[in-house]
Length: 401
Image 1 (cartoon, rainbow, N blue to C red):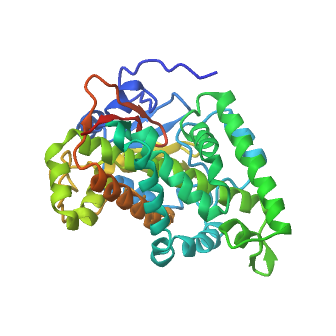
Image 2: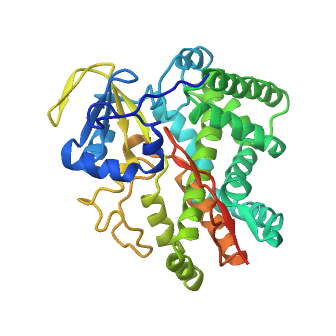
């Protein structure tokens, strides 16, 4: 059963990331906090800290001695114990510190290099084109459900060598892990579903290895010894979890923006060469991911007395809206030149799959605008958003000629 959250009366001392108002419009809250309390605190889910300034967040991301990645979930709860039991190393490399972080990340990087990602581009275009074929003649679609949601899960399934026929199941597992953390039954069911599925897939690969990522991990040695199966399980789960919801949210947010900002949409259609710069700006403005760090020892940071065991919520989306770092930070400037955004994180845990995410977002927008250059939000329709670890639209009803 999902936990009910009490209303927030003071965001500086009692924030709640699953508050409906925060999910709908976090930007106003971040602006207020920067002026009054740039590192907020809350005891709702244990002792948690929420920074909102770019310089603070990037400094914290680099300080791995005081801020560990062994607990990255921003919404903790009873489900953490079950996840730890079946995946003792979590989801390497994102949930581990060096030295395990170093070699697990090194094993993943080749699969998401520029060259490797370029090889997935044709397949991604075909996925996008086929999806658009299914609704383009109807004059309406849900840009999140019918399109953005469907793309990354199919690409990731290909990389892992698993069946794309289970795309809906994979997506629901990912949502259970990230979006429905407060729903204990749904969350635990998702964790167990992922675990049992990959245990079975690993057994298959041991007998009949392929050319996919899962097979390679199973037949790779580190320091002369095979990788622990629990580490392989965690890495496979990470690729699925991190590769699905985040990119789905980025594609959806970008389409939501273009549906409501006619000038930006028309400009991208008229100036397709602007796409690479525009992609970076859309990632900055609508960065979906907040990650947690665990405070390892008592430390005072900018006057905040953080204690060992506290959680630090790495609010990368807020960093990207900091007016001290970005001129007109609250505006989407498609041709923005100075754009050191941290949509993919910062420091040693910066997203290993950033090349893949950029490619998928680029191809998704290119194919949509090629086939549906004119579209808008359906009048009276409700756009719904998910929040917590990953913020993104879950329903974007649009209409088009």
